[in-house]
Length: 408
Ligand code: ASP
Ligand code: MG
Image (cartoon, rainbow, N blue to C red; front, side):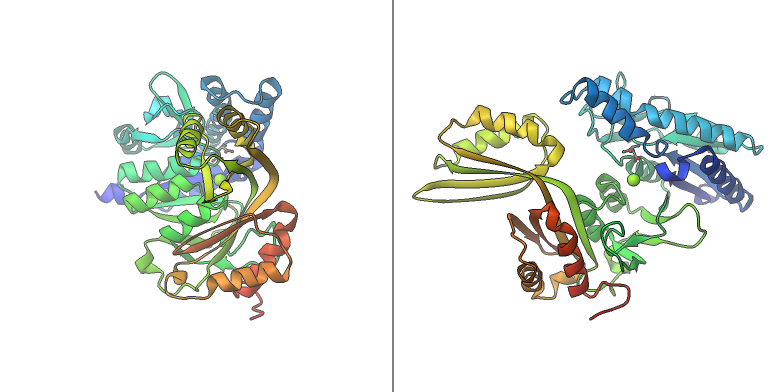
């Protein structure tokens, strides 16, 4: 047990291993950690830009293909980075073993491109650590036993937390190119502030509403197995953001972040024949194609039924095919690409009223049309046109007192 308590799972993102110099720097940091008594277990993403490059190669051949060949292609980026990292670590006199998912035993279901981890062979990891060999594990990939699968873009975070959970580690370090999780995406607006602690619940909302800083499933797993996540910079030694159970962050503000998803699409349909049978048929077919539908709004009166729903923009062509199959020409279909979802999130919203009114006041004062809205007890989201995203985000960020030089 004593030995296990010194094991630390460390995940390095694409920019952290984006060049040979950076791989050397990561290897050096791992070496220093071992000198301080840690027993690191490493998970790595592909080198920065590599997975995007592979996606575009696939698109050049067949834009709509999803299946085993696609996952095999996308998973190859991590094979390169873990091999290089293992070599850089061995150069420093330590022992390291690069491991692909099938070698380690990261078993998943067979939903290609969106696979879920079913089990991790913790024994193999513990054996290596016992022999003073540093496991260098490929993130993002899994294995059905026969086929290579991938966990969805950004999935290396999930690999890391699944491993931490499997070996019973209480925390998992996620190293990235930003020093902390911020109150909004710093690439979208200036004046963002760093968040020192967030609850699993808030982080899950942020990840599902478009924040790319942590993969949604990784936070879901962390909450389930009580693994605290420490997101921090690869290039600085200081602490970043801790994602922890909500009892440990009672002091957070009403709204802790403004999150966006810039690649949303909306399909609006009118008039859908009255009754629920068409809805049932439509959503059944969409789910059979593994299309994840986000917001749904529906209403009906004597003129007919009105339906609108949103999804990721890169899946709208699949949804369009389904809609054509279910409805005839009497239903007017609007396919709206180029949309974005903007959200405010905070556990404090549970106990404070007036957040929705301030949210709409800002969008109204900026004259930004709203296409869909959804709320939960800790978030409010609206789908707007992407061209309005930046001004909506900065207006809301200021309204909720999140600017780093407070303008409240
Ligand atoms: N390399 C994969 C991606 O770019 C997985 C990850 O980085 O987490 O999505
Ligand atoms: Mg990531």
